[in-house]
Image 1 (cartoon, rainbow, N blue to C red):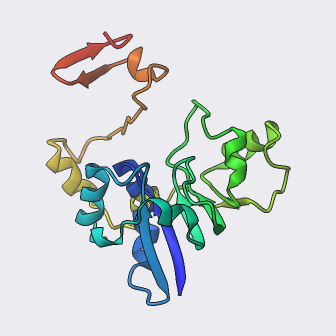
Image 2 (cartoon, rainbow, N blue to C red):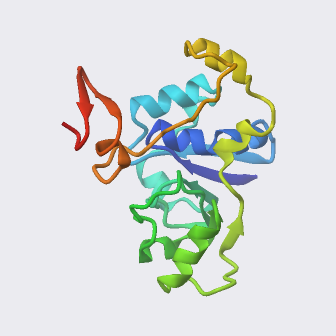
Length: 199
């Protein structure tokens, strides 16, 4: 039996590995568990359940830390398990903030790179050598749905009240103050409409 541990503390983590996980789910050779920062929060549990992944597979505390896992898969920099044969970082996006480009990333045996810029940054900062065996050019799994024809553009746009006959641009910036959201366009902050500089 192969023991896999997935880190999931928020919906964006689950969105990153949901599609690859569906391919693994149901394989009798695999024993799959989930963990989070101090346990799964309600939104992570809810999304896992909505996606059809059983909540009974949540792993807790000392078991996560001291059990010998075959692989740990995480879109987050955190690594709560201390004993794993492979620690796989799948990231949760590409960001200019650069929080992944620290020595902490060296605790992962495998980096599933989203793009070439990511590889260059790791090399430029001296975290991994050029041609490192830790690098795997995978792309971003959560974008697979844009290319495998599993989504209906027309249905989605009509559901949003948009005209499918017109070109559409998806703008999804981070909520951090460094984001272009705070200097361009409108954002919804609770009940307040924010314009420029977050005001």
